[in-house]
Amino acid sequence: MIKKYMKNNKLVFFIICASSIILTTTAKPIESFEDLLSVNKTKYKRYGIIKGTVEYKVSGTKTGKQILYFDDWGAKEAKIEISEMKMAGLTFKENKLTILDGEWTYSIDMDKKKGSKIKTPLPNELVAKSKTNNLTEVGEKMLKQMGGKIIGQETLLGNKCDIWEVKNLGTKMWVWNYIPLKIETVMMGNTITINAVKIDLNSNINSDKFLVPKDVVISDGPDLKSIFNKIKR
Image 1 (tube, rainbow, N blue to C red):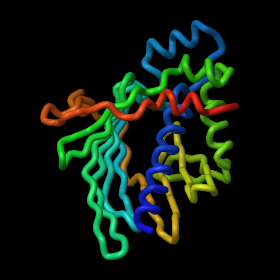
Image 2 (image 1 turned 30 degrees about the horizontal axis):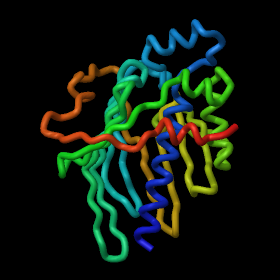
Image 3 (image 1 turned 180 degrees about the horizontal axis):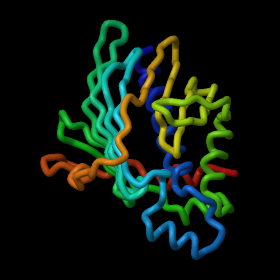
């Protein structure tokens, strides 16, 4: 039962991350080849905000905290998660760092000092596969294919969010400026909620936040591009 829950949880995490990469690739439709070059030049405008730090509280079956740092409209991003999950008398602890530098996405276990990297999908590859130059439509289409839909709006920390629900995965996402401010997942009677508690859009972010720590060993992860190539219209 625990293994099944963990497996489903990883699936939800992957789909949320994959959808986020596509849904937030650009804040406006790409209408020409010149626009595509512009997006590539700016390293993909993933968020509607240039830079920021978002702190989250993790509650429910899993408890802990997350901190998201991003700059260059989300082209550079680092997320720290320190959490603990208890199930069936067992405790699972996580001290994880995820870094996006445009070309690569790194997933690092900070306790083991080991991590893996995968190629981040490029906009032109997504355009070619999806046969549309509007990447926001691609992201919305993926969510809708998974049964997702916008069910309403809610204001969190003074920011109006669209609420996306994916019933098949027991997941809801509150999204503002393409940034998730809340994610709620319910599986097998267990609930995990990731809720933003603080947003800072003014402070400068040290560039070291987006670098892989020197004492971490990185290996190659799965080919995400081949996974996306399996997605059909």
